[in-house]
Length: 93
Image (cartoon, rainbow, N blue to C red):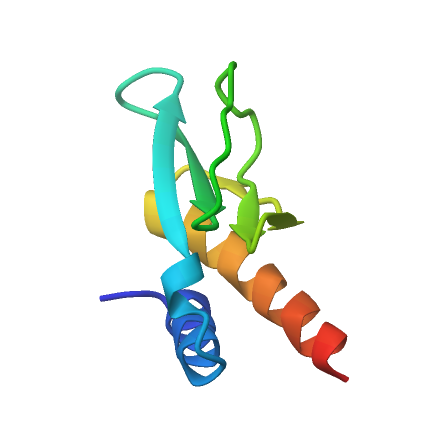
């Protein structure tokens, strides 16, 4: 089940007709028993990352909106999604 931040962000982007601009990349680092997840949301624009990202970057239409790091993948995604939604709503005002 998606976390509240991720669901809210998806609903917001869908209402704005921008859901297609969102996709997630995932990576983890650290030991298998205690990984640190990096969730990267990217726009439909083309980006090349030559090195693994150390932060969870959230991109919508080519912009980095938020950073989140967590021991659980869904929590890392939720952190990025919640902050991204806050910033997008702020921009709409």
